[in-house]
Length: 209
Image 1: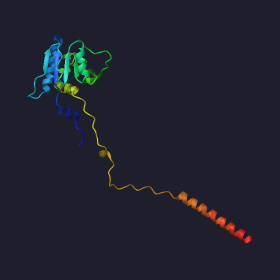
Image 2 (image 1 turned 90 degrees about the vertical axis):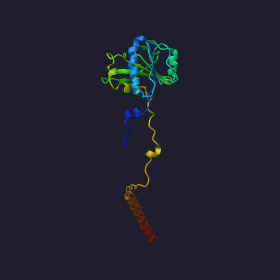
Image 3 (image 1 turned 180 degrees about the vertical axis):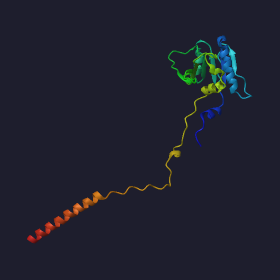
C-alpha cells in the first residue's frame, strides 16, 4: 500500500477543545471561531466555551483563544510555557524577543497565521482581523477544517524498524569477476627463464672445471 493521505490522517485525530475569551471589539471574530469549533464537534459534545470576559480561559481546554488587544496576561503566558496553545487576535502584543514564522498562508501566499514556540507550548496569532473583508477564508466551507489542522499537534515522525531495511537472505549471490592471472603468469615465466639461465651457467662452470 502507498503512504496514507495526511488529510485523512488528520481527520482520524480527535478535534481539539477550545475556550474563547474576547473583548467587545472582537465579538464578531469570536463568533467565527465558535462556528468553526462547532463544525469540529460530534453531536454529543458540548458547545464551545465562549465568553466576553477578561477572565482566563479554563486550563483544561486544548486551545485557549484570547481575542483581546494589547499585552498578554503573565498567567496566560505561563500556561503556554507549560504546554498550552494560545490563539491570538491580530492586535495582541507578543512579548519581546518572540520570533514568529508563518504557519498558514492563503492561496496567494499571504500569511493568515503566525506561530512561535514558547516553552512547551505555542503562540498562534492571526495575521489579519477576523472579518470577511480582511480574511475572506472565514466564509469558506473548508475554514473549520483548515483551522483545526493548524491546532492539531504535529504528527510524530514515522519510525521504521531496522529489520525492514535489512538485506534479504537466500538470494542468488552475484558471480565475482574472474581474477586476472596475466601478471602472475608473466612473473612465473620470468622466474623460469632466470632459473634455466642459472642452471645453464652452472653446467658450463662444472664442465670447465
